[in-house]
Length: 292
Image (cartoon, rainbow, N blue to C red; front, side, top):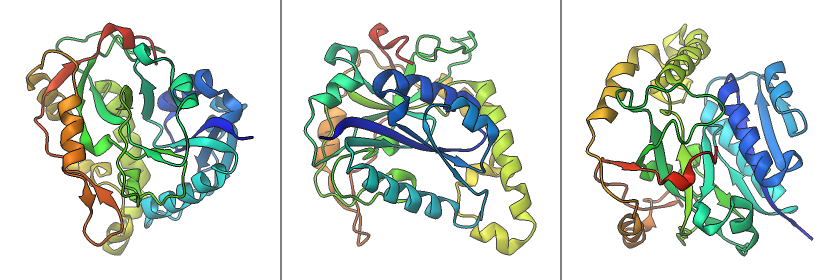
């Protein structure tokens, strides 16, 4: 007999999001079903994730960082499928949530059959500094209530069949797109301005040593936003404030568009949909507040 679901992430220097991740998924599945890959063998990660399954890995090598990371996560997810019907995998600032009208995440997955890959609708939680002055505590949703549809974060992140996920987890080698109604992937990178700046400061420091030579810089293979000369922190958040606010919370048209444009991603073996959508804000319904 398999257990219902497990959650997997890899983390380094992200205490705020790891605390939120453990708190949220513990409530859904219990700590015994949480797997935290501790990149760099950090004591802080072991402390926050005590009671979870913590797997220490060395700090490095930095070149081809994301490629190595997702090779590791792919193998881990496929192994865990022997014991769990569904395995959720993603970054520590990504949270799969169910619309409370449909039940809790555990309830929704508990009545969902396996042998599939589920792609929750991706939503990016953004901090509108002019309208949301309240600092974050242990609760994110409520103090932050505005989102934008983020197709790039509509990830095939709930796995219950043999699968290979692309670097970053954005694509899978599965030819069937299943977007469950009422399941969302909330990306929290921009949920707080001060937190974002602090996170980026730490990421800049993490790559500074690897930029000592031009050759090292070419081989790092992580997002260019990790580099200090690519940062435009204030401008990014000012851009959120300038976006139009759409009324309602109906994403059925976006879902239909994703299904209509589904097809092979060139010759890569992965599949994708057209990510082009209007850049606009939506307001989360009050029923989501306090979920995490």
